[in-house]
Image 1 (tube, rainbow, N blue to C red):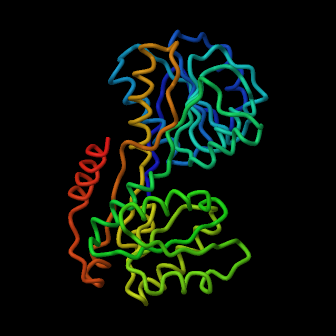
Image 2: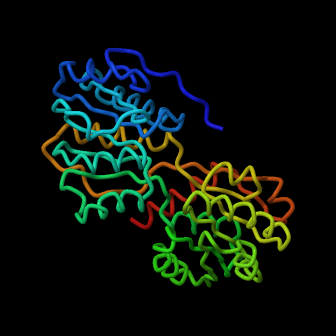
Length: 323
């Protein structure tokens, strides 16, 4: 589990339960490079992301930026009139939706938000993302996931996966990527009313490796529970999307931690602050990522497991070569 970080102290305080902080925050003078960090809640991963972002910006541009932090756990963005912040950083899906609903003209960077959630926030209003809006997604590019799978089991040619209501949008891309690498993709579809075992069992059967894709929370739990059970029975390794997946029995997982996302966002913001009249650029997948592996599962499957760092460097090398 991620440890809850120590909160930053200073002129701006995190808003959680004390509504009086809203008024005091709005009356504070805004510096030229004042940045609002809008947190979806007080969950530790949002706080860690905010801390990592601030640390990175302060190291890159010491003394050139000030941060205001608002936690949306008790309040909503449309209820407030904001000072002219130079940038709003929406951390998490809820904060992103609130910023889009608010509809102001301040540049917005959405981070720690899945790609689908970011796009849905804008499509719900029947509009494309604003010219001065961008994102650093939480989810990994599919090419990176496939690369990890192939590094762990090079002889694997038959991959399997399950698409839910959210991940179904990835079907065409995943089929294209696997076909380009000479891999066969066996897949099924799972909705909330379906029996997970009856859907998963035939999909996993006869394949070399299963890739778990993030979807709705209730489906994530159902798929994780049963795919790890079935994969153990059928000796099919699973590639997950969180450290918890690995601990529960996946061979490995690839994901971006709060520190990874915060670091990239801090670097992106520091570069943008040098020319704040420019756009924030196109939405992008995480540059930094983490890998966790399960040696016990690898031994049970007879897989020789490289170190996490070796896997990381191999993936980075392949991504650099592909540019």
